[in-house]
Image 1 (spheres, rainbow, N blue to C red):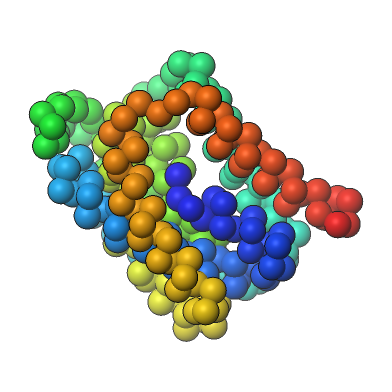
Image 2 (image 1 turned 90 degrees about the horizontal axis):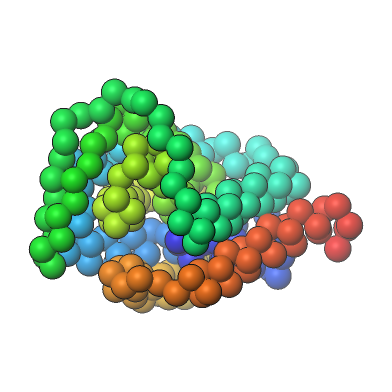
Length: 248
């Protein structure tokens, strides 16, 4: 989960940033987080580099499109769409805490892949090139449009559809973000969507968070803590929608 999930509601609700500026500043944070986190995941050998490269091949051009489109979206529409993403995240967390498995969809896949990390854990899974390319389109566009890392897109495509191991998906999504977010940041910068005095201090925090995240991911997280985070995200979604419905 990227820090942008928290940053975007704060920028919109507390500082009143317009959507383009919110997305630009938040994407800088996501980029900093991906730089720090991907190095750790690569060192741990948990990232599927080939998959990340395929996703990035379509994610890079779509990230440019996302930075261009967000300038033409109203604040109300932006907030409602982002609240929808937060609700999806909440639903996914609740499902995981209950131990429920998402339904699998029969899709053409590659031959079985085997990945062994530095700790000796072996992961066996399959993935599809067409699905990876489609994921890249969604990852690049959504991450640049909202300013989020796009990890939830990876979850939808590779965990929910193909049942890949969550640890591999988390690591691979971070590397894919490392490849796509710099282009999105550059596009936002050229569009004038980045307020650097806000972005740089927050990005510094992203560098620290990128180191802590992989270390926490190695351990089994507390279900209670996970639910607290999920309900906090749900409250943020309600606040984003409520500001328009009740004019506060």
